[in-house]
Image 1: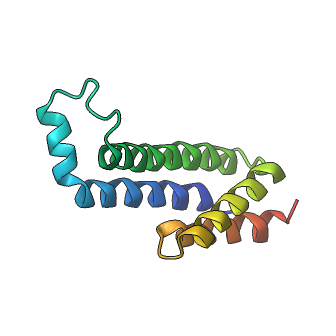
Image 2: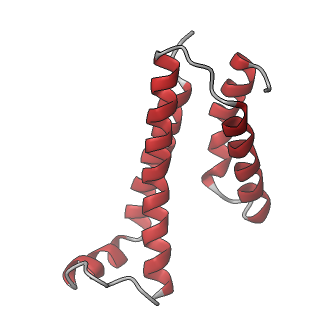
Amino acid sequence: MKNWIGKTIIGIGLIHTAFGMVVFWSIFAEILNEGLFNTVNQQPIREAFYWFEFFGLVLMILGALINWMEFKQEAIPGFLKWSLLGMSAVMVFIQPVTGAWLMAIPLFGMFWTQGSI
């Protein structure tokens, strides 16, 4: 079995984080100029930037875990596959113009190569 599912999720996380930096660059610069500490609270655009970036990092960590599981030839647990499918479906339903569609690629791999449960 080729190890590509985890690497794909890492790539999606990298794209997510890089895209956020480009889109929110001026917000990021403001936060840096103010010294980082306590510069996000109760400012919706800064909170959006913060969570956008950290979600990308979480995707990279999740991708690294799945990559490790593939390397060890461990099965990806059914609850993880179904949870990611459900989360992605909700994200796409609520906001159709989103990068969440990219998760279809590794999800297809998870279900196709390892079965549905």
